[in-house]
Image (tube, rainbow, N blue to C red):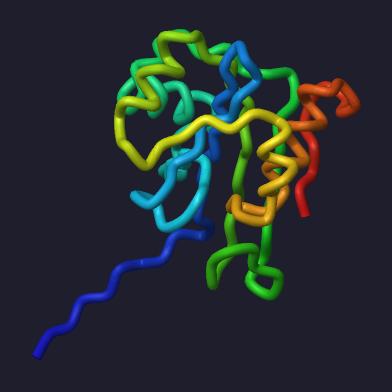
Length: 153
């Protein structure tokens, strides 16, 4: 009997999206995603992170011209120091400013989607996955993170 085996990619490449509206609320996915989390998409090896993020935002959330924040997170693991998975991952975490209309559309997509302000994010930070999302959002909104890439460990 012949068996087939899929070749595992060298690394999972993913984008996590921190969608912030004009009221400084973070968009979160609830029960549909297995807990409170931010939208994320798995990318192919050929896709640039920001291009993949823009394509996903347009297709899933109708965000046609994303306004990316000046701060973004980068996390990379090797096989012995895995973040969430049992193999190497490379993740970019982008902050994206969205309009009130885009924020309302996000809320309407599913009854399990919500929008939390900075106070609720700080109070309930342990309920959000991946860890560190609240810290990155608050650092961006409060202005104490420098522009550019931030290493996430």
